[in-house]
Image (tube, rainbow, N blue to C red; front, top):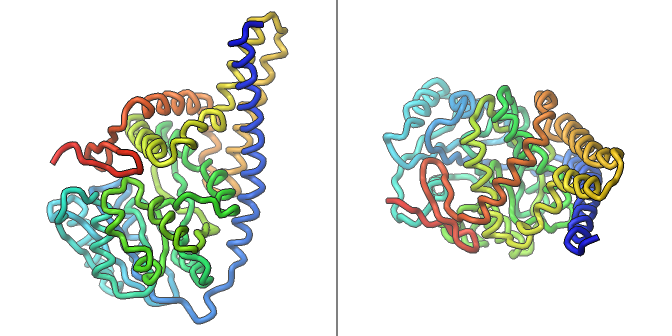
Length: 392
């Protein structure tokens, strides 16, 4: 056999083995970590007062229902909700004002303030405005497209009762998919629980997922506040790393953070995945380089079967890619029902082979370009995650 084919076969077998190992370890660890998080007691001194900061730009799908869900939270302690927007002309401003008028009993405010420095990204700027205006000792940062449910704040705040924990976050999941583009994003994002949980369990988590994060004000001040993150495209990862460097732990909450996306578009999917892939390449180049081996199991199995078939192997060799695809579908089904709690994704499992091909294409594209689109702006991502705007 030519040496190149031997090397390819070895890589295929290693990749298939890594996928099986990651799948098994991910499910076992996720079950253990999330079960332990559910057993955490309520804060012994009572629920702390919380300032919930929501950076907003534009109108996401189902924006009204998403934002309104934070004005009817069932949190038993004192809370305030701060909607932070850069511009008065932002289309979210009239909606937020209308929602505030419909819920006068809620301690909520709209803050509109333009960025003072062009190098500061809009999201981090809005977060900084919220922190400056906030009044309470616990800060919760929540993305605009998140839908709050029962126990949302309690899940985020509860881990902070342990003084060893500096930051708590929820694994984001895409819920409500009704179209193929939304389902592709759900399949790509929801499976990340199997990567996040082991990292948290081993305290090797490189940051956090910023859809929803909770931190004590004193912890944020101890790590230098948000100003050092002003130009970071992955402010959540940078904040988690700062907390880890301060000797504190990063905790995962028991319930996923739900982002409602029913329709979406393939262009939206590509833009989001490309931004994530570029960010990972700039922040964690080794992890990025290893990503294809650990994630594209079905493609590696298909390549291995094709190589073996070319050498005269019988038709049974095609059972390997079929089995690998079945394992991926079973893993995603279990994740969707048990961890992500998005059973609507089950009818889209047939998209998994297409997802692998699309992710491989995005991985290649992200290797060739560091320019990304985010909330209507073009950015160039530099090594270390610093993002430079490409237009005023």
